Length: 221
Image 1 (spheres, rainbow, N blue to C red):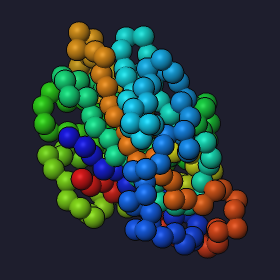
Image 2: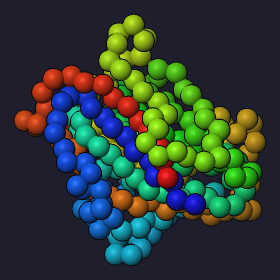
Image 3: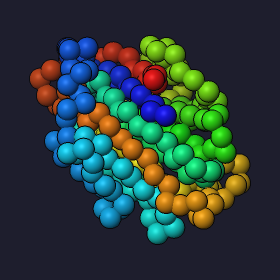
Image 4: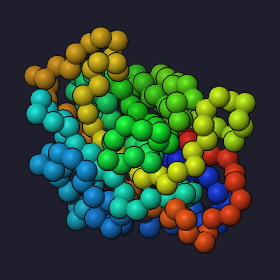
């Protein structure tokens, strides 16, 4: 089953013809906008780079990030989840100001699928530490936002203001993701496919940035 994930990161006002670029996104290869961040030998490009398979086994997971950082834009990814018994396995699509994964005061917008024993998927969202939320999903409805964060200091979460990079990954999250259940390595390698490597965004500090707006994330099929 393919899941279609979308972020609208509108830190600053920008004009993009999102609908006009939607069909072209399927023709963009991985290498145009992304690079492998870790687990090089666990990353396989298919269909001339329009489909990238990430794998997780006992040696390592794998992940990638965008070549450039952004201050606003429309970010999308189409992905499949591991088809086998996968508690403890975490599949992600997110924005972060620290693509090197170093600790510090960073910004992030996360969509994380948690491993499952069946067709009921758990999607965890996190917006800059402003409270993690878990949704138990059996199906998706087009154009319905699942998480919205408006710029409001009283919310208790810092609004993203830093340069953000787009990332995707698969990794071992058994320490927190599956209520104590460990990854069953006899089912490995766990594999996820990512597609749609177009990025319709404003690079951080560019002239297409102006006034502050809101940010929201949604998912659909």
